[in-house]
Image (cartoon, helix red, strand yellow):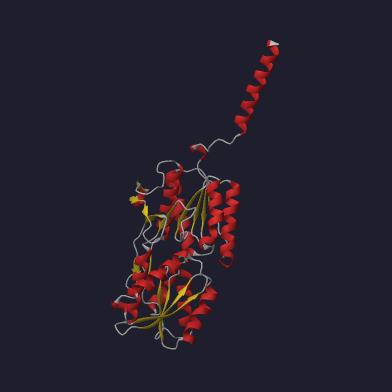
Amino acid sequence: MKKKIWRIAASLVILSMLLVSCAKPAAPAAEGYDMVLLPKFMGNLVFDQTNQGAEEAKEELGNPGELEYVGPTAENSVAGQIEIVTSSTTKGVDAIMISNNAGDQIVPAVKAARDAGILVVTWDSPIPTAEGEQLFVAQVDFDETGEVMADMALSILGEDGGEFAVLSASPDASNQNAWIAALEEILKDAKYAKLDLVDIVYGNDISEDSYDQALALIAKYPDLGLIMAPTTIGITAASKAMQDEGLCDTVKVSGLGLPSEMVDYTLNGCAPEFALWSFVDLGYLTYYITYLILSGEIEGVEGETFEAGRMGTYTITKDPTRDAGLRVLMGPFSVYNKDNVEE
Ligand code: RAM
């Protein structure tokens, strides 16, 4: 009898040892953290620059895990982003870093990722309600973006002001939507009383669509003096459209653009002034913060201050430009014109 009890006890011990060894242990630091960098879509130079910055941080931090730079096409951005969040969840990565182009439609997929223990951080374009997102790495202050655009419109149209229109990315892009809302808000200020915002149209961050939208605007508004495009795709497409039509003397283009893509249009007067920030730095900072949270050095909660390598010290705060959510603010803006665009 005693022997039998011993045998049962021994097999129970072996069974429990087997069960323990089958359970997946938390990834030890030596294996590193697998992270996904998910842009709005592929084929946009600014997102490639973000990846370059993330690669730089990965190397500096010595993370042996994978950095997967993957995104949908611009045409299938909303559904494609949701699909990638879902497939990354199934794969069991450690973190997903998203420039959200799906508005709040991304929330269920993001929540499922969070439930599976995956860290979700946004950059460039946040989740509007902040649901499921740990924090947002903001390139610049979103309210300031409205002011920067209003000031560029004023400096291009002059004291007499005039009609201008916004050519945006997609209607689901939470970054552009927030910037346009901030622009509309600041236009109420007496300083901008002579600026007349006549329309807001969407080119979906697709060059051809943006080009066509720019042409449609000038057909619809014969007195239009300026197209303001808060998207690097939209601003180049609109500049090309005005150049092709020989209209750069009467209809100027401004907004957010990449100097390397805008240099010709700035020097030939089609787009005399535009602004942007460093997407390389945005990628570096986003990767850095995400890594610090994964490795437990910070929790990613309000009030924490941390060092992000070559970029210095940052603090996590409430996002003052959304109803909910946390923010790490990067900045600054750079404004470009013919004097500095070539640099
Ligand atoms: C496009 C994208 C991106 C935005 C820039 C300014 O490249 O829409 O999200 O930050 O423009």
